[in-house]
Length: 133
Image (cartoon, rainbow, N blue to C red; front, side, top):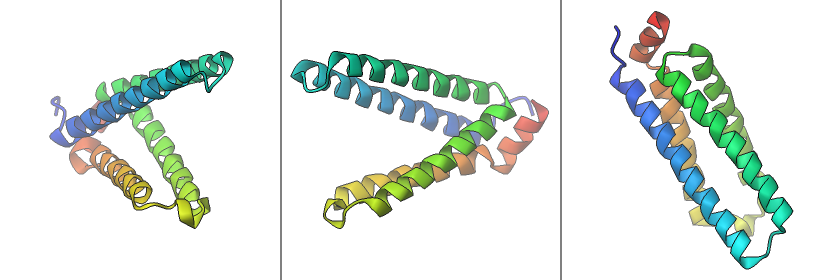
């Protein structure tokens, strides 16, 4: 089984799309902070550095998954589980007046996408492909 299973290809594409969306959101936030002057330049540069490192690492993990590296799949799974726990804690600790329907919907969609990615990464066909790789 040298060809990547379609489930794995879909998971990889969704992860790249999420990474791209996150990058666009960061660029938007960074630009607004820079133009408005609301965030000091030092803080913006620190944010940019952290985001570049983080996005670079996630890009490397996605690339490694696409090359059949099981350690990258495990790492993404651990990060995804931590992310789900943090999102749940965020929603639970949020003041009830701030729990707007839009925040809840976006959070639920985010959680559904993470569950879907994990399901695709650990689908029977994906597992077989990682075993051979």
